[in-house]
Image 1 (cartoon, rainbow, N blue to C red):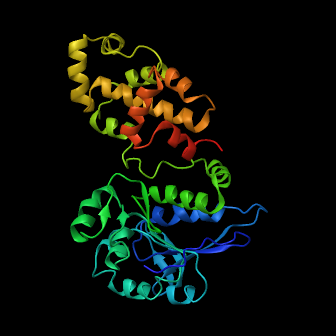
Image 2 (spheres, rainbow, N blue to C red; image 1 turned 135 degrees about the horizontal axis):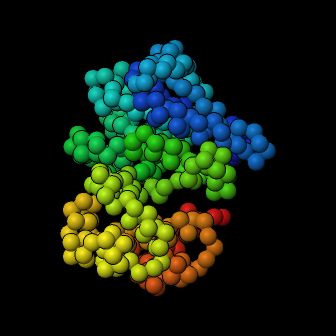
Image 3 (tube, helix red, strand yellow; image 1 turned 90 degrees about the vertical axis):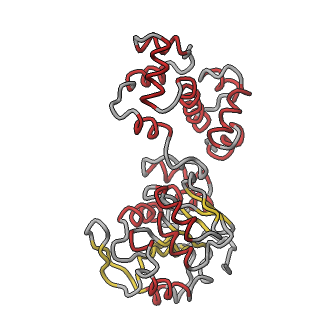
Length: 331
């Protein structure tokens, strides 16, 4: 897909166009909109001009019933565009529903420096051929459909967002915020993006390769009754201590054998696996925020040595602790 891939010199606002349509998902629009709107250049001036655009212009009703005003795509694309993002929503998955919109967009795919999609907006890019031969993601519920309908797309169902050969795609809803922050970091640097994330009371970003389901969400989905919530709180507070099955069973006031059986039944994972995941999560937070050595962090969270922590990190995130720190740690 031909695009102007050269990064701009960030001395003035660059135009970001969010393409919307009837029943676009509200947060797919407003999440990235807020991120780009609040990003600032070194002199304090806005880094981006954000425009909502639709095929015909005028009011567009989102899936929440809230109406957003928009400009006509043909009018917006007449000038220079830095970033073009296709938002999500139920119509985006239908080739019939988006045929006219795709025809409109097809004329302008070589205009922006950067193209991307939010949530199921990936289906529109896929139908336009933008994702052929590229890695991409979308909402976890629709990844199988995307792969089935567009076999030339390399679907990454676990990723929160994917950058592949200049094309960005994100997973569902709030992942559009993560992707927008990643774009700001790519444009303006880690320090600027981190300051923006703090103003918005957000993490700078979850790793693009991190699963759409957090470890904690998976656990909560299995343990719907919350039987082990108190135990998990205790585990976090004692992450560097003895968290053997015997110690966990004693805290849960159960026999070790019964505890191991019931815990696996209710949470979907073994106690040992849960402990490793809690320790990886604790180590991740320290790598992002603390200046301790990796060896010191491994000891603090109970891994004992940095090699055990490295293996656990590779399993959880596909990167080593050192690589993770260099990407997501404090600058």
